[in-house]
Length: 112
Length: 114
Image (tube, rainbow over all chains, first blue to last red; front, side, top):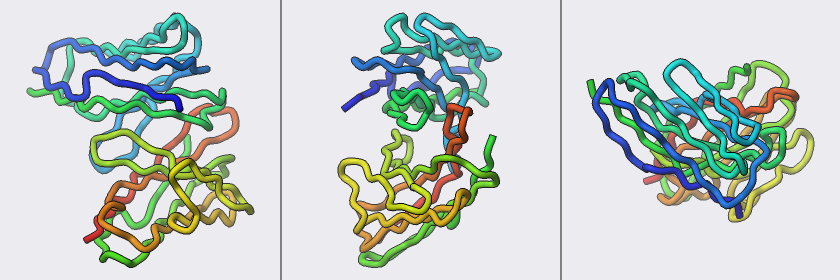
């Protein structure tokens, strides 16, 4: 069974602070996806990282895929209240997003 | 992208009854999936809904408890049968499209079993 551990599980910070969320596994994935979910909604894809060592930037969000394709991180710079939500990483072992293993989730709260 | 709707958005049900959740996609997709999620926690895959054939269930989930239908490429249903309070959860439908390499999720159905 493939497991994805996310840390921290909960994070509450002040607006303007930086934060990093980690996603770790002992398994190798063909790609790793990051989703954000808000209350009452389904998860929405933020980014997919495919290549070991890959770094992708989405405005204030920076995503990195580990060299061995077993781990990933999400860094948010100057967090804003609109960043509040549940962040989920998901490892894809099928190569076509048809077999996603979801991480345990990180609940982020950004206080104004 | 694909727009996915689910009905009902929430329901409160009595123990021993069954609830059928509907999932509608606005365009043809290749695969459809059903997940369960406790609020604020991770997603657990229940099954893959296959068009025209029996769904493929993950370990710990069985067809008698969670019968699934997929009569065409854009519609699927999940029934939660003989419900108990332990079935209280959010049920999410997702779908992917060939070449998209991602899953699109519906808004979820929040189920409470008394």
